[in-house]
Length: 235
Image (cartoon, rainbow, N blue to C red; front, side):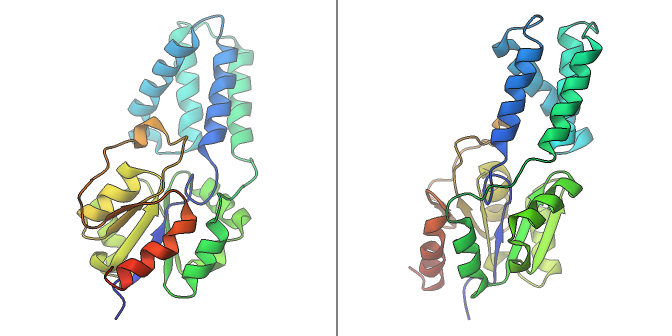
């Protein structure tokens, strides 16, 4: 029997680019508010708003857009021009229609592993936006299951794997976020593979569990098949 009964992937910034669009929009936000706040101060205020609001709005573009609007109101003491609010709404709408660009080795790796293991996509964010990106990625048919969740915690992962008949002990989760993709799965008893991305969101940072037997880190998805093979053979 294989040691891995299923392999799960994160989506944003694991299979395709995502954070780059948030950074570009944040630069646009800073330009629109340049007369009211310095970029560094504005970035701090926006991150604080996102931290407060993630429990209200969840993850994704909609929550980010609302946090930009809230921050604009705060730093201008409610004097932000209507045109700026309009531009921020437009920026959010543009983010919801950006084209999908797969990360290096994403397609070939998913296709290869789909031949040997059941694959899951476990992601968080806006439901419609995540469904759109998956459809445009061309990878949808390679996954036996897709889960779009509001939080990624050990109980959430354990529940997903159990519901689909894959015990957590035999599950692997692959993603760019230590906080959401790696640490919770290891806590649930599974394997966590970290694929760092240069633009990982600040709220997804955490400390790598060095020395943990079920933790692996690879430079890109091109190395994943080798990691899977090593685990399967006890290497």
